[in-house]
Image 1 (cartoon, rainbow, N blue to C red):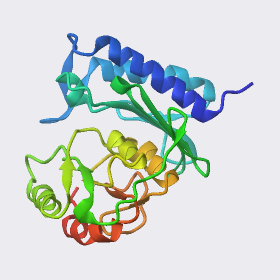
Image 2 (image 1 turned 60 degrees about the vertical axis):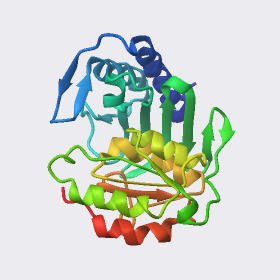
Image 3 (image 1 turned 120 degrees about the vertical axis):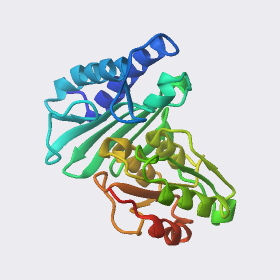
Image 4 (image 1 turned 135 degrees about the horizontal axis):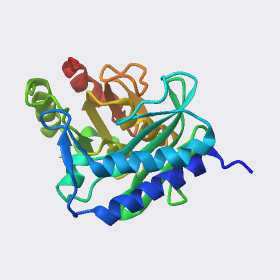
Length: 259
């Protein structure tokens, strides 16, 4: 019997997570793709392991470190280690993110919080789950009572103004903001009600595809910074429980990022 795609993605995420735990806080090789953009040997080994496991599906893969598919038709989007900088520094906030895409729409997604052994998954029209428990976004109705999450883009050293100003505008309005460094986990935590809203500029499609589906299937809302339709190939995301979305758009709309 052919393994359902979401089960295959879960198995691949768990296998990559085991590899990452085995080498966490060990001596690993690190190289720089940009001034503050890292890749480790564990990123590459995790992606190779995921590719080998997904190969049985016969579906091509588009990943952060390797591209074997074009973003059309049916394909996988893979981030083998979201939060590489955290991993390289021994900070235990990182995840494996795998999404099955139909053109630009995620139809299945898995996010695995490795160090807490939390496996999030969703299928279009079938709900979102954490270790088998159904997920639902929070019921926070006011931005002033909300806990938000965000992240900073890799060009923040060169173009900090919009990033810093957006952070300031939310900082003085929200109850709190967390910036932990793994967008897939931020979205997963939004889906299960731990965060109420999330915004971030200049993300890649493998950063958000699985998490986007988690949020939508848990009852949340996902748009771009202007409140318009979003897909993972749009470089700026606003995701919320749906109840504070309209309060956040006037702020994010002022800070649409430049590529």
